[in-house]
Structures are given as C-alpha cells and as structure tokens.
Length: 285
Image 1 (spheres, rainbow, N blue to C red):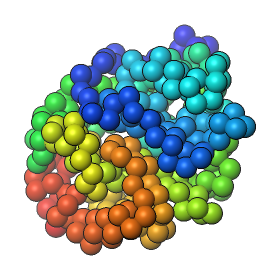
Image 2: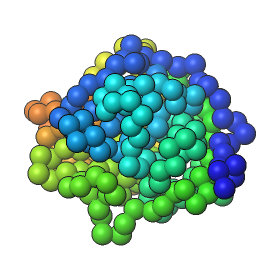
Image 3: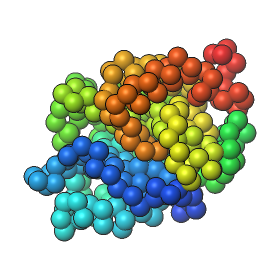
Image 4: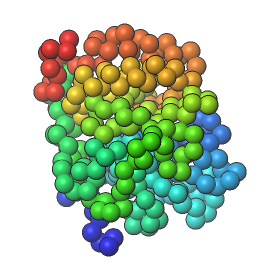
C-alpha cells in the first residue's frame, strides 16, 4: 500500500533559510514551535504525558531533523498520534510522505485540500511577477505538483473538532489555499494560524533571513484569493487570540498580537495585498 504514496516529480530541496532555522521555542507548556529553514512545524502535546501531534511537516528533506526535534522533546522512538495539516503547500508537507511511511499515522486536512494531497490536482502556479522581493522571484522553483497520500489522509470531522488535539477546533481560513485551516483553543485563546497571516514579510529575502517581526497577510506568491484571505484574517482577529503561532516568522502574543492583528484587518489592502500580480483583482482595492 505504501509504495503508492509519493511526492510530486518536482520534489526537491529548496536552498532558502533564515537565522531562525533550527531554533525551537516552547510557546506554552503543550505548544512547541520549531523553524525548519523558513517555515514552522508545531508539536502539540505536553511532554509530561508524551501524547502529541505534529502540525505541518516543514521543508523537503527535513524528516531527520523533525525526528530529532521530537526525540529531544518527547523521548526516543516517540511518534505523534497524527499529522495535522494547515494546508498542502510544499513547505508544509515537505516530509509528510517519509514520515507517514515510517510512522504509519493518519494525516488530517480540510476536504478542499484533499485533491492536492492525493495526486489529483496541482495548486495554481506561484506568481513570480507579484509585487515583493526575491522569494517571490524564486517561487517558480518551488515544488508545485501534488503529493499523493492515498488513503492515509482523512478529512477533519465536520463538528469542528481536531483529532488528538483536545480543546482545539479547526476554523476554515481560505485565501492562501482553498482548504487552509487554523486551530483555536478557547480556554487560553491559543491560535495556530498557519499561513492565514504570518509574522514576517515572506516575499522579502532579507526579512525572511532576519525574521524581523512584521505582521503580514499570507505569502503573496502563493495566495490566489485575496478577498477570502481578507475575510479569514477578520475571522481570526475576532477571536481575540492571546498567542499565535504562524507558518512563517516568530510566535507573537499579548498586546503586540492584538494591536498587530487589528492593524492588519484595518489596513489589509495596503499591508497584505500586492499592488500587482496575476492573482490580484483590482476590484478588491
């Protein structure tokens, strides 16, 4: 069965990094964020009871690094109960096939992402012409063909619950990807935002490398629906999160988070939406 699961034929290592690469941070006792090159993976679960899930799977060819991070936090030969995906872009599913083959754990994603995770459909091509910096210009080299997880991927329960993530609920936050989701826990208002908004200007090579804190909309070169992206940010701001872990950039909390999210909602067109690019519809300005 496993021989049928595979990456796309354009799967490859991408030589992009940041000063945050290799750095892990315990954001809350059961939320650990770790940066692989330019993207974050999250371990959800308290090391005291050793049960956990992995949210997103980082960049291509980073499986050994992810396993080392898990070993350090949870002990030798530990594996997650499941892999939970915010969406299926290459930098969030970069090791999922390797890890599923090794761990034999289920993967969960929104039903609208399933075609991109079962080899049926490629995402729209990244837009190298979009207003922004060097990362946007590099985007045509990013893997874009769908991976195929076969029957190892399942959809989230329709009641909003997240398997093996008690107290969290999934929230559909499309725009950056059709089935993009974020995860929210009411009791402490912890938010795992994915790429619905991020805390670095992801299209600028300099900002990505320095990881300068700057709240922003989703990465421009892969975002195809800016109207939906704007609505998703409004939805997350309305939850008044106390702490947020994003797909790119550093975790953010407290007043900085509150103020930054309000600013992003109020000025989404100016901050997030590029002035030009093939997915920018002038009608939304």
